[in-house]
Image (cartoon, helix red, strand yellow):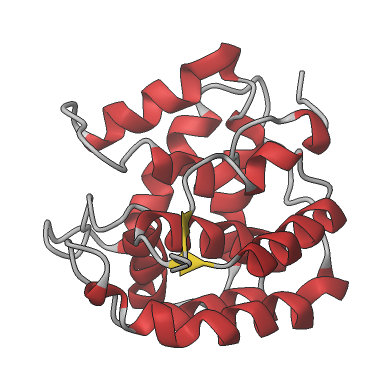
Length: 210
């Protein structure tokens, strides 16, 4: 049984999966996906499948998908470096999900098309910090992350784009202000998220010197 969105108290779907690759992990990548899919009685498999299918049906090229994945994992699993095509990687994730469902659901309607411009505005405001991520993130920065996020939000899925944007800010240690957090929480509420999806204790905040 699939939970309602507001009852999913951790980041979910593809953005939630990227957290499993943030930090030390020892198993093969496909095994990490399988472990994530089995977590909590497979309750998050439907959202992961929907996100994956949405990207596979989109016009985003492999290099943009790779940039989204790399930023959201904090550069901890660089599929380009191991010569894995981003779309083939999504197909592996999709197959793992399909193998854990009694039947494969069709692609659901996009959530929150009306929020596209709001999300795009937040991405553009944060763009300079995302581009210069290597100044605060010891692992470096991700080329092309801003146009990839803009492409995803404007043409495919603002919901997934917003969640991957938040993950990139957290994983790349991009400092935010309390005002930014308040706006992100308001957007998350509009998307129907549980409040813990946006604020999970992983943001880095701008230092305020007294």
